[in-house]
Image (tube, rainbow, N blue to C red):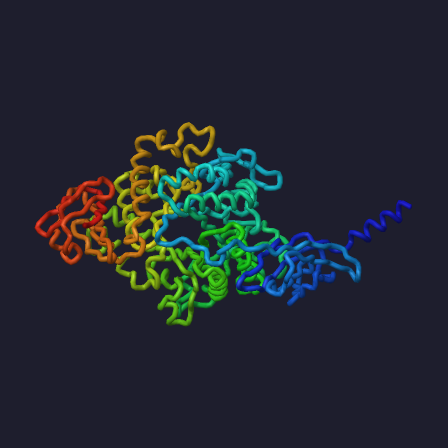
Length: 617
């Protein structure tokens, strides 16, 4: 009797079960009705897949790993809101999954996105604020909280961000970019999130998918939006799909590489994407090489991979009501595949903005990646990527403020950087910044000198483009990259109950913090309503005596910006700016409220190492 029962138990459970379905649900009424559903289970490909309620499988694809089946359905032909995915052995039903097609939110396709009207605030969730200590460590996630370890998990989470949204709103921020919040279950240094191990799940130490949606909706209540940091180039080596690859070519593996997956590090020379003289081996190693030892390089040229990444991005946009995407390591991807990826998303959401990290130094190299680039068009390519990051300006700014004025040194660097604006198809849709989570802290470079910070913030807040601020800059936070990335990703003071000082409250900020904060709050809140800054034209004047002057203008308004990087007070001869000051008699400084006379016969005194933003009348 016991043997019979054991035999029956083994027989029943020897058949495959549906263990994972991705995406777990979808929506009705998408512009592209084609939906690819991944089914995963032990030897699932050996069974028969059928759909209930007359739903037709348009394509069923099996791969070399029998644990996967990919089915494609046309959601436009499905009249029911739910149908079953049935797994059968002969006529016997052995596993079933109820698949739901949800209703979209009204106006979802026409959603607005970030633009030059916005100021983006970059947060590393683990280092901002701990709003829920109960999720600091999770039994199912390897790395536990250890705030004493600089590169460890510190406990910051989504609840901490939600609790401090009033601080960000009062500061003048209108959009939040979080470094990846999806599960990163690597053994160590998982706090940065760029080695994701589950693309459909928020890391449990940050919170839940529902809390991520809550954050997005709380931002909307404040006329703000959420931007997701999306990684198409690589996943974490512990990702469940990497641990049991559907196909060998799901990731890039080198026959002469190391370890189980044929690891070879990228040479990081992404100019190979457009270099007419490049050798094939250099190009292959740049694009197919891994970004790091625990970050397998995804093969976007594999149609199944590309469809997975495309649908996952759309899933998050729809589910979390996102206002934009920032894409990591953009030039390391297969560029033809990524052009399809970006187009699929912007076809679905015509107003949606996506900014790519093209960490290159020449304006032509960066402009190549922006949608409708004439540079790329000359070689028959269009990235379909709406926005790029101005790494030229970021690179040149510290030197511009540190160097003595010379032919190619000092403030002339900023003048020259803007002189390349003709290369960009949409110059208002480029991200401008002076630091981020991968760079030296700006306030470290300048020894927490508020004068340098104020000039840099003035610049990125008033030139063309979309300004981005890194968390803590507004209170003078420092960090030395030579000590390791963790040092430029310090905890925000006041984000933890045990913190001795709280910088989230302007009343408890130190005198030094408050000087940074007050200036930032003033300029960002002023900028919100200034269409002339968002979309106006620019006229700039060659720097003299380390003073750089430019004007932003449209048919209704004009603003004069003066950056005096000279260690001495400078008196400007206003007749030099006659073409921009024609008909102008005076201007009021945005920060101090002081009025300056600006007729040609007047002189304009500018204090050393300061900036002026003058609204002209």
